[in-house]
Picture (tube, rainbow, N blue to C red):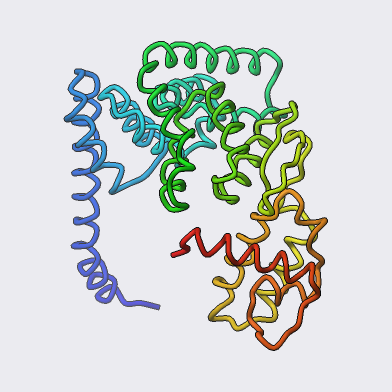
Length: 323
C-alpha cells in the first residue's frame, strides 16, 4: 500500500500534465467556438482556417460537418466533398446530413461517385428515400449541366481525344471523366471503349464502372488482343470475388519472398484487370500461369496460347509506366 507522502508526490508529478491537458482542451474549445462564430457570421474564409486547425487537432463528425459546411460556403466544393468522405458512414445515417452530402458533392461534379454510393446503400433505403435521393441528384445534375455547360463540353472533348496521347497522359486525362455528369460520362465511356488507342487498363476500369452503375444496354469494346467484343456491363462479375483472383493472391502471399510479395501481387493484379472480364476463360489457377503472369523464370517453356497472352500482358503493362 502507498503511504500518504508517496501519494502526495504522485499528485504533484501529475499536476503539470493535467494542467497542460486542461490548457489544450481550453485552447481547442476557444478555437472551435471562434470557428463556429465565424461560420455563423458568414466569415467563411476565417471559419475554414479556424475549423481546419480544430479538425487537425481533434477529428470528429461534428468538426468534419462544420468544416465541410464552411468549405462549401466558401466555394471549395471539391475539398468539402473529399473531406466529407472521411465520415461517409455518419452522413449516410441521417437523411438531412446525407442530403447535404449529396448537394456538396453534386456542386463538385461528383455525380458518378454519388450514383455509386446510392446503389451501394440501396438495400437499406425505403422507397420514399430512394425516390427522394434520386430526384435530388437528378435536379442537381440538371443545374450543373446548365451552369457548367461550356466547361463540360471542353472537358468532354479533351477526354474523348485522350487516345492521341501516351498511356501516362491518358491516365491523367481520364481521371477527369469522373467530374462529368453521368449522362456525359456514359457517352464518353462508350466512345473510349471503341477507341483502339485507349489503354486496356482504362477500358477495364470503364467496364467495371458501368458494371457498378448497372448499365444494362449492350456495349462494344476493343480488348487487349485488339478484337472487338460486345457485352452487357450490368451482367458482369466483380473481379475481386473470383476464384482466379483469390487463388493468385493467396499463392503469392503464402509462397513468394515476403520482401517482393506486394510488388508481385500488384503486377499479377494489374494483369488480371487487363484481361477483365475474360480472365476466368483465359487463365487457369496454376503455378504455370503464375509464372507466366510474373515472367519470373526464363527457363520455363510455355504453351503457345499462354505465351501469347503473357507477352500481350507484358507489353501492355510496360506502357502503363508503373511507379
